[in-house]
Length: 331
Length: 234
Image (cartoon, rainbow over all chains, first blue to last red; front, side, top):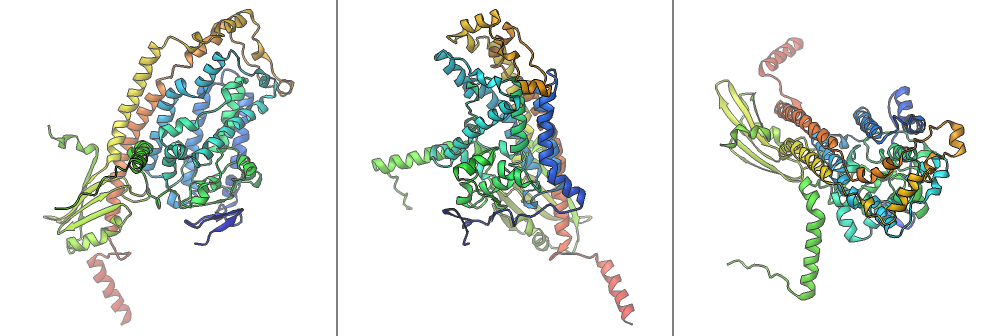
């Protein structure tokens, strides 16, 4: 394969990718279906923002957010079934169980660890140690601006963490597990080694004080945009949306079997961060994964970063101290 | 106790009558496409086919199974294709409720023992308490004029004790979520155990009734069709 030049890079040498928006298929079907899959994303985002902006205090709670998130994902699973992007990404029972296992870990064990060792706990400790409180001036801003800042600050941090994971081997090891997924479905964002899921959840938002409602709107904004990163639905995403926000097209390129393509589109929500730093590539890919699309078992996903780290350290140690194991000769 | 009373959890067994003129070799030839998948190795020995799968692809029609035996046997009713398939995924899904239930119990236990909040160790905790009690910390009441104009509900003011307690509460995690996931996996197991048995049986039947991509015609029907074509030619 020749690949396509994008800036200084040649993308698509190792696996087929589509670069640019011109050759990406459109939603097929009648006018109602096309209308629905063109306007669903912006309408859903607007509805989420309006709901959280005007919901009475008795409803505007984290528990409501969790139920909305569950319901919204269930709806998206139905859309995956109605209008799949690729048949080769079809959700099977096994894929669903595996995905939900990681979703479950995220809601329970990782959340528990996060309470004690996560960024909020660290920030709380730093604030206490240096005798300074949260930065209150954000609370004077309009709620929607606060919400955008919360999600942007988190995404900006996540962009650099994610980029770091693709550029520094010790961070790549836990993240690599997520890149062994061979298809995208709505819950695939949760799949990964727990260490990576912990690292990617670190943020600096704890330093700032915001109106509680702004947190809920920020959560809705993040969900209403980034949930489409890992989804097997064909949308006619509006041009402005894909210019500002991360889409499944962008993220499928990021998960492509092509190495150069996988080193693009690092942000979680706002693709314009990638545009600012020159790492955005518009396009999409169908063939995903690593090692030619080898699907990793859950057991290997849990142990891979540690076993790989051990293997590499042992190799380096042996090379340095000349303790190479001699091959066993047959008798 | 032998495992035979409980191995239905991860074993999927079944059988079907196949055309009696099909030899074991011919039957396995027709199932060949199901086993020619990345990560699958298999051995055919007479009337038995044994397979194993490792890192099977997501879209492999038998992805949920990790190993198994397929046999073609003579039966008083005709020739019978029987299978015994092993699935680690089914087993793990069966065990997952126990894991999440365990998480729930663990969270319940730790939350009842976790009474020391981080705020107690925070050096400026005293000043925070003083500010809250004196009502100085009322910034939560303010909304930007734009939000007032647009009619956003005002945040509720929390009393001093409620504002401090979150630091304690924040360290607790609800066990309910874990129990919900335990229930979800129990439900998924039931669905998967039924669905995967149905799908693999259907795939075997579909492949057995195919011959190089064409449906195999019942011999009686074929004879009748040939007769009717002959009639037409006359």
